Image (cartoon, rainbow, N blue to C red; front, side):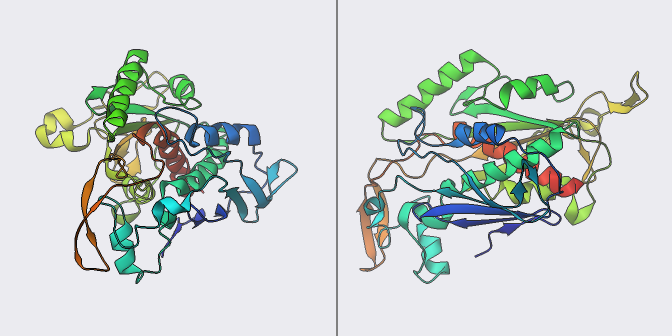
Length: 358
């Protein structure tokens, strides 16, 4: 089971949804980097469960306990290790799932891959619970990047059929991203949030769930970061973004929209700005050409699937009896993952950028 990521910054995640704790190790962080733990807690709270009607009712403090790599307010250069306790579990809700795998979940594939030895409780190591580890790591990396002039922020671009105003791919600013990156349920348009909440509530009342799209941007990233072929910005970002369990698609810049353009529309014309820097008048490329940053805002979107654990009866199989079966899922689950996944997307972007810049 591979739960380690990165080339220059090495990230390892361990634990499961209902184990005593989950944890993360970040190796090869630069030393003497000041880390504001209150700022880390802000990011943890944005993702933490049980704090909003759009989220699961499972309440966890999500207070990271740092074990090593941090002393007197700064990184020491040693591996930074932290654990986050699981204190509010109801494992009995999952006792039936060894035999009756949930549609849309990894219960069946994990049972096949790990010969039935996988921890089924709360989804085990396949649970979105482990994204708390990503948020901790990203909150640390974000602070290091901010001192280098890089700011990251994201918003709920779409939930169900409700859309928020997209970022301006050329002019999105650090101030705008900073206005989003400490908020729960970050959106650019307050009316969109109201409509999105109503969409989520309709799904919840129907014992169902709803998915959406998160748009994330980073500004201040210098030109020339990345590599062609397999070490490019898109490759590195996608590899960690797909570590978010609910992510089913990633696109950069205009993404799949470029398939409907001509070259004359898609190409971003270059020009020198008033400071003598090379810029582009449009940014369909999302700030990336040939796997290397252009110096324009870095822009990507992720598609987040509806929560598979829903209250409606579903068709599954009985793995013991080898026959079809019906399943009604118990437990506490998000009617929509998107609001709590916004800081996770930002965190993954921060980890990826620091890995590329280290």
